Length: 211
Ligand code: BEZ
Image (spheres, rainbow, N blue to C red):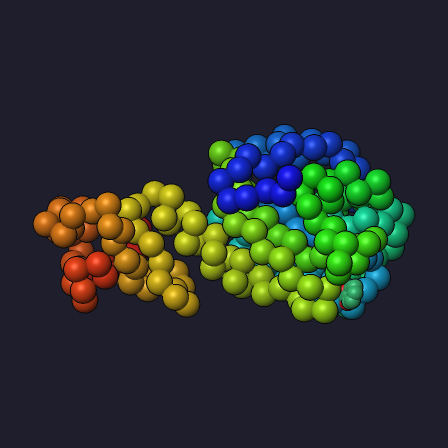
């Protein structure tokens, strides 16, 4: 059965480009991003892994550990990492799972047979420190993901985990947020003392509370 939001992300042990890992041990108390790539030595995947490596500082700032996957073997991973570093001005030091037996791909339903019988699609899971699945996105092989969007979602998830707020369309860190329905309008000043706007009774905004 496929995973859904709020499900526990299954643990696994796997061979990776930095050695054998236990997923939960690797994550520790951090947030996690687990993302699959159709195959090594392919152009879109090369740019995606390069971009992720370039954003290493942004992931670290948010206490996020990243973990990539493709169904190729370790030897191919190592050669490909050299190419990524050379062509993308990057230093890939996060693990890439060598999922030759498709154990992890199957566990996370990353192979969509009507797209490809053999390769994973571009799946991406954000996993919270509680090991629950917080976000899932699935892109086709032909479309590279936007890793600034992944960081933006992490900002929203981390904010909304700690405050009774939600983030509006196209929100980016620092912009006003929506007060959730769980907070009565009369309670807003005490909960959000930096001010608020009532646009409609169901649409109340406030400056981002942790800024
Ligand atoms: C790519 O990463 O460029 C790619 C991978 C599989 C199919 C098509 C493109």
